[in-house]
Image (cartoon, rainbow, N blue to C red; front, side, top):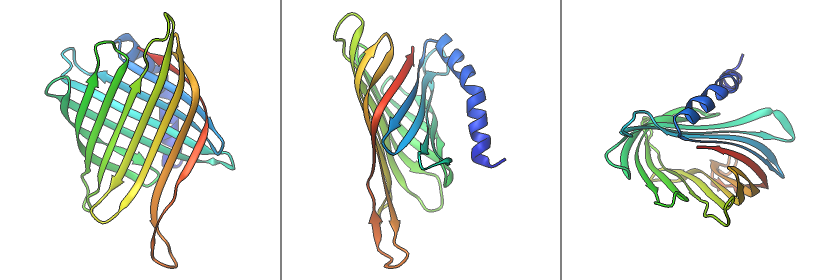
Length: 223
């Protein structure tokens, strides 16, 4: 069995356990299905305290993208860190992320913000790769879902990542979600954009591509 297939199997088996554990501790988790005009995607976010004081916290964003033209090809992205929080807004984090290119260990600063209404969440990780050829990354997400009525909310989310070094941009992605929230179910329109930079094998020039994927999403949030 290939490593990616093993990873998918472990993910599917452990997902119900993660949901039950996180929900029982009153933490945040969501699962999403996104169908775009080019690709389909499944996404899972877990953000929770590890200890009762909130000194240690765990953050994980995982998504798997499947191209309609070749459903055997799975493009994974897993960003997972444990954070030591100095206060509710600032911490230091360590962990790693994984793509088809392999696993990269990282260290980061965690910048967090929750407003008193509970309708705004921000988490940003300025990141450095712990590798011989060092790259830097800015990864984060912001969620804003103000109430429109007793059961209905506006739902907006932006997720972003930019990887670079002092010579070039390497890779970026952005996710935008806009819709409604009804009883912790979110639905609406979305757009995912992947922006890789690579070297042209003929001219040896750096080329940056923009690959958008626009469609609809359905999500369930557990709190």
